[in-house]
Amino acid sequence: MFCGRDRTLSREHVFNRWMREHVVRRVCRDCNHGWTQHMDNEVRPIIEPMLDGIPRTLLILDQNTVATWATKITLVLQAANMGRQAIVGDDQYRWFEQHRQPLPGWRRHAPR
Image (cartoon, rainbow, N blue to C red; front, top):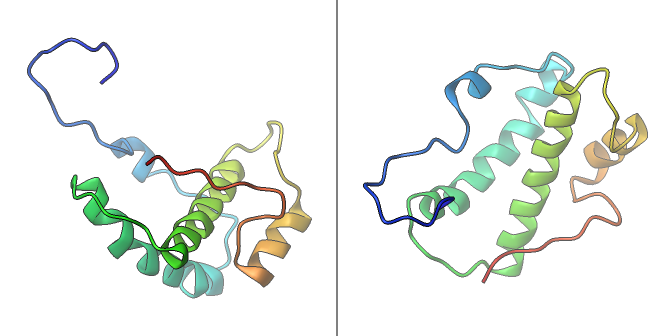
């Protein structure tokens, strides 16, 4: 994939084990076990087959589900980036919680 050489292939984790164990302690319990968990559960049947190499066409509703989940992941990753330049402010976290849609001005692009 990276080098373009035809060699024996190995499995690469999308998220390394050390990343999966990294937690952010800025999400309240109600959100973490409520609407954000629901969002994770909703996107799983859409994304998981694609991660297993099964091609599919995403309907508009599925595209929106993936884009909304990707927004959540981006915001959580930013929260883990404490002390560094923020790409969004706290007000946009509140907007996302209220609307549960990609942030205004964010674009969705998917490969064909």
